[in-house]
Length: 194
Image 1: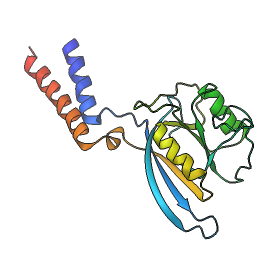
Image 2 (image 1 turned 90 degrees about the vertical axis):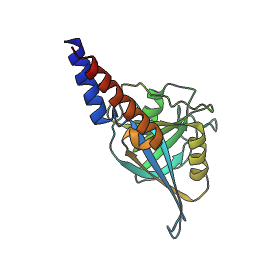
Image 3 (image 1 turned 60 degrees about the horizontal axis):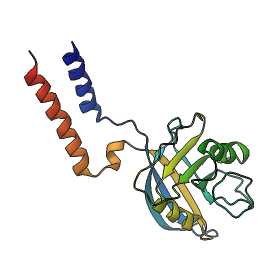
């Protein structure tokens, strides 16, 4: 019985690719604020928060600042915000993720919030909050700093956030290796079947 359950689970994982679509892609476009001519387009990857909505969102990117001239997004923002769809960019630290999300989306009506790491790590943090009605995601420090440079450049920085299959964000060799391992385990279970 246990072997049958294990086989069924392995089969489901192999067929579905074991992805849960928590990976997201961020397309950042830099445009001239007067002519709105696109000058540059870049792509970044992040991870949605555990309870985040996974709907496509786009808007003007704003690197928020507080009265203390910090970018953590924990207190009142000190600059003018767009009157149309916009996405908040904040640095990790100084307060809980839930507070950053609340300030950006509830207090200032951001369409989404991107939190970038405050340390140069390779690991993406899963924001485990219970906020279920907003779009929020986490990116590496290097991605966050590049997005901050775009937002602070004086040009119009526009971002589009979309969910992607987790396997699409992995190098092809890694995805192929995971698939091969999955099918090999399934074959071993089949050979051991009494």
